[in-house]
Length: 570
Image 1 (cartoon, rainbow, N blue to C red):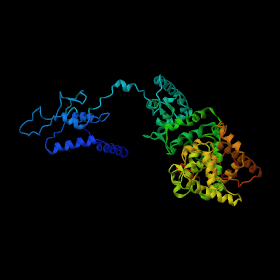
Image 2 (image 1 turned 90 degrees about the vertical axis):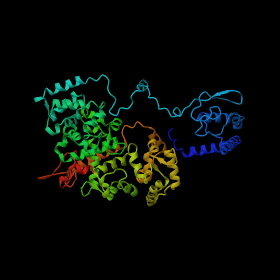
Image 3 (image 1 turned 180 degrees about the vertical axis):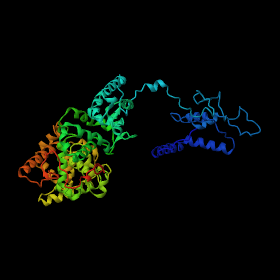
Image 4 (image 1 turned 90 degrees about the horizontal axis):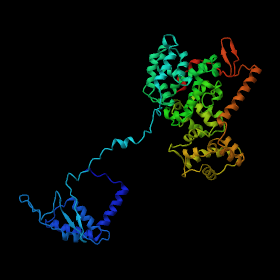
């Protein structure tokens, strides 16, 4: 018999309680006395297991009228036999088997004993489930995407071979990969990933045989998300890291018509690529691991935006990832704060972005709580970190909720306690008193926030804030005094109506970026009229300073060798 499992504490207490109840029963005590008497006289032999079950069933009847004493009266007990003389079958209790044995109960009913042997008492091995039953459950997990029915791979390879036949020696260069990508029925801007995976980045061209062999291996991926991960990921990886996107995005910068003006400012290709990569991970990598999986790609709209790059000539219409106007705003804001232009800012620099954000929150941002980048060890923010901060600061209604929740969760236990809320609210009260405004007591503020969020438990969780439509009001109350006062001055009915209307044409970030872009363009035009050569939106040349189009972010007045990719992805 297999060894019994250890009972859980609660179950053990219940078993002990039942055992004491059984032990205190008069019939049980009488039975134990009889057995003890027989054992002392050497007249007791161990019954078979079938007897034990039957005696228990006879002694514990529904009305407790049958006692063990009556059962013992019906049993014939003999002294223990010696090893030299075998016991008589008529006078001894059976020890190994109980075949053909019957017991008569008190009501005259004949109870048949179960015929059991030591071998039969063992646990029988589980019978295997028939194959028919297992096949009846359809497959429901497809990590590489659901296979497509009626997919004719051979006809698709024929189209690929026909396309390669148009090229000299059936070899495609990087300029020819657009046609190959369309023959593969892939989006246009998959051309560089296809080229690199087939080995074109090493030889400068791809032969038809190598490409077809690569394409066949790609057929193990059954949807666009798994194929895109397979194309860009490093060998042996099933996820994408930040540097995996660089060749793909560099091709977008080089070939998209909406970014043609950047050809005259190659020094800022890396700045734009860095911004796009950070926005991709900001929106897609919801697990905050720094590794984008195929599942996260399927849940996002990134691949749809990649497909739209072919159709949309104006990248500024693709506001989720590729908008150059958004990059322009982010980089100009960072440029204003980065006074020494080393692509890093400290706490003092970040405080100048918004004087109203609390010092405690700035400390939390620099503590590394929202990302794990190496730059936090030096208590500095890189440009990549600033992209996350600016989008989160200007839009607290969407994915930014988790950014600020991590900042406010001081102990990292996944809930915002009253202590943590009071920790941030104390500084808000000090700022209000400095402005001659009487602050609301924390107890009253806490009641308002609980009514606002309506948490499922007494502590506020990330799920509660994501479910709440006024999370931005909650966050501004605790660490942004300017936006808190702005909300207090609004009509309450307007706030409720705004929260209930989910069909907003533009997010708060898109509104902010559009307004700031118009302001920057107006300032650029005014500076050009005033012939202000101290304007940072100027680019140096050998002949001095020359004005450039406002789209072209200028290079710093220093060594451009510091502006490499490695600095962006630390």
